[in-house]
Amino acid sequence: MVIKKKGGLPKAKIKGRYKQRSVKGRIEAFFLDNIGKVVSREQLVKVARDPETGDYRENWHQRLSELRTDEGYTILSWRNRGDLDVSEYLMPHARKRRRAVRRVKISSEAWAKVLERAGYSCEWEEEGIVCGLKEGDVDPIGGGTVRLTPDHKAPHSTRARINAENPNEWQALCGRHQVMKKNYWDHLTGKLNVYAIVQAAPEEVKRKVYEFLRGYFGE
Image (cartoon, rainbow, N blue to C red):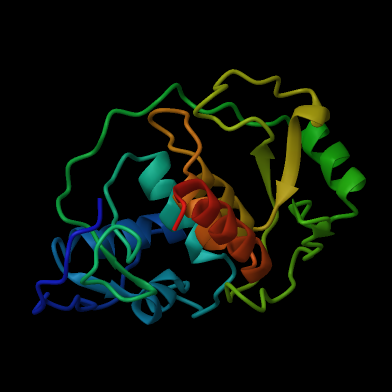
């Protein structure tokens, strides 16, 4: 459900350096320091950096997604609220939702086979086009350095139990496409999030959907 614009939402502030060891830990602490406040993309990029070296080695989008899906936090974006702009986020409270079955981690041997099969690049395919970003590349859309991570081919929400030793059940994805896939599925119900799929689709596909809906509703 989209909440209509009400205006005047307070803006988040970075309260010194966040020294948690992981990117996810730093982002989590930042949100918890700013409950009910608007967090910007620029702030997340800054908080995600290594507090000692200033290096930016991971895609913060994926860590943000993990806070939602793995940790159970509610983090809203412009897709949920009309008073948030694109690349703005808001954690309305610190309560965590009940999590699903604990995720299976791929074995090191299976992951090595997945990477070899993938040519050490992202395997996400859409409209016949494979992403192809490699480990260490700069993501031209999401920003940040690409880090390939293992992904269940079957969404965790619909099939939590998966063989950690079978490379055919896994794929290599960059952080941006990990997030995109998670957005396609409601992790609580296991149902497709059709709205998110249409939002992410190319303009040509959006037009086809539009024409279909016009014909369906007769408008």
